[in-house]
Figure 1 (cartoon, rainbow, N blue to C red):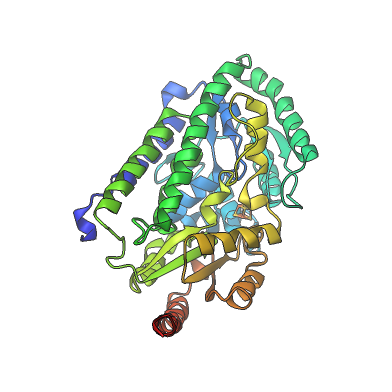
Figure 2: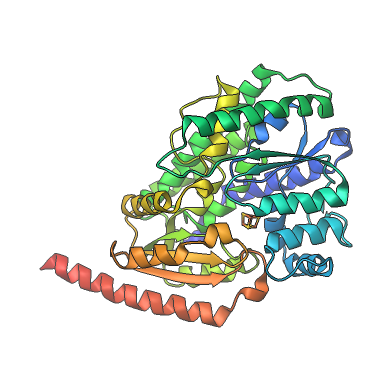
Length: 421
Ligand code: SF4
């Protein structure tokens, strides 16, 4: 079935939710609500949702700025404020937007200034410096939830209690700023919707195991990700992922593949280069290659079974904060990637290193060496940036992608020959 015969309802629904999110952020209806800034990995947004805060995710704004081709302009504003080339391009883009001439005005809406910044410090120390710069600019309240790095196979009881107590300590601040008393039943209800959303999301990602995969578990999945951060804990996010699953079911019935005929199955590690998203995707589509799985989308919510449910709301929030993939040690990530590669039966792995994000890129060359060597899974290392298009070289990247697929084609043919013998 031709791609154009199937309407991508999920993409339209996602676009509608993103549009509404930005409209509501700046609407008169919600103007009296305080604004909290949060980071996406290990998010505890539901706590603030239960108090009625308007929630801003600076990283998500940066993704939308990048996809709207406005990143270079914002990054220039950030550099004019003195943030150098070695600084994360999301940070420069956001500070350029908020503290530079645009004063929060984006092509998709105006971003309100923060009253409170909560640094859910999960896997990235840049979050702290970023929040400090925003605090200097806006003289807002700032709090930190320090989430310990997962050093062993899983988090310890101490890790859990440490994060749990910090979340509890946030409650008086939320009460004072919002003017509302803490309502555990309301939080439970919101977290019930979060659990439903996450369950649907995990089911959705598993569709990449089907052959042919009915969607691209990298390029499509990242496009379905925004409601997970922006709307998690609402009926809207539940409804959205139900629409996506319905669409995927329909595609499975029609044996639909987003590349027409699936020839290669890939596992992607790392963020896409958002400003060059289409060109980047096309490089793989041209080779009939589908990203059936990715680690990147597993940053925003825990990808393991959690010990607690919404009935214990603070424990559940602490589990969500501590069990993000982003916070895992290198060996745990490696084992997880290998499991994904086997479970999704991939032909190769693409490690896309983004120079801005050291926490995401650190160790990717070692991962590539391990997979290409010991694990025997062909792997390709590419590098550019997730937001700054100045670091994306089209011809060089395209050459490396072509060389990789030429070699993969030969090794697949060889393997098929051996199977016949
Ligand atoms: S370094 Fe990576 S995780 Fe940290 S703020 Fe930048 S993009 Fe986000």
